[in-house]
Image (cartoon, rainbow, N blue to C red; front, side, top):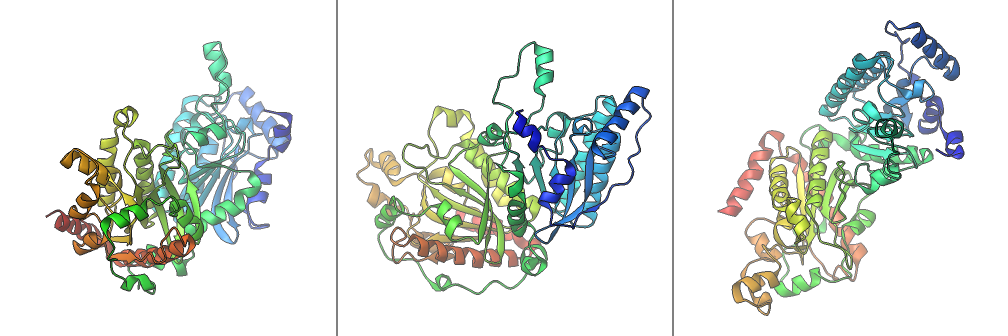
Length: 510
């Protein structure tokens, strides 16, 4: 840790003043009741109180972020390195349970060396109770946001520091399970440098982003606008059926009449906008999440929280690879499955976007369980209880495309398509060459007109002018269709949702 970082380390009070609206913090803490201790431990506690002005290593309470109420738990690292003993644990669990009872989003900002060694195993076991309280909070559909500060290690990182729906970290923060000092003492060599850093964990898909404390109010305000919208804009997603938003012009459009091969060529045009552009130009706001949370990040898939008009959602979609980049691999689908879980926990609708020339074909993909991940993603989407909409955006080749298809409502761009293999691959199987790809694509009914006719596609978004010639217009038209179809999916009675979805795909398969 550099001298600059030492000077910038903020106390709990300083961080609260930075993140919350001025004058809105109301503490929830009762005086800490410490367990029976040795004289030495009692002296350490007294020294920590005098040094920090705090009576424990955490501060909890309620405040506002840009006018939105939140519950907060913030570590005081100066108090015995932010360690968690039984008194601190009780304070945390009391705050989590109160946030749950009051229906508040919860923001945790840990900075801790982990379990308080002076209290041993009883303090260690308290992490189970904290985890249980957070599980119940999330089970109520309430957001849990985490901001990891320097340093966060041990039992804190392995419990309430790693359970966020959205997890950000302080730049340069040391984050990990086993602290480097302990590792060196046990192994007589230093821990490899550059591993336990916020930036490395972000690259590895373990956390969603790295952000300076000054940026937190804006970032968390954006997240909360999506995942915990105001009651009047949230009725359709949290309070049962409501009327759909007004139908856009595309709701009355039908499939185009161009040839299948023309559509395939259009879908492959290098100038065609991608999912990233849809989020930038079509969504009212979007916060991109990163990776599986378990050590994988694949650029072949984008995971985001987004809002299209009045409709919040979790977005899971293919990100078209650039030149030299690989197609989506098994980690992409594990990211997708994380998105399904986030949608279920936050009780938000799910939007999937399909635009892939096919999954990665490689030894790594096979050994990484690609086929199994396709199957598990299909099962997750068929069985998710939340409203869902799927968008056929462009190319839709193979199992990697099929994995994101199941939904309550399906939108298709005019020149999208869906096929068991790229047409050239299908031609190679049937004709032992690729020359018959155009005629085979026509015969296989891969285009939108055929998909609409068999009942897969509910809503077609025209591409006139072509999407690559007017990408902004295409993205805004698609965004309007997405808002409308999300509202229609939300209107389906929850009790009927899974049965209707299953019957839809059963009929398509017969």
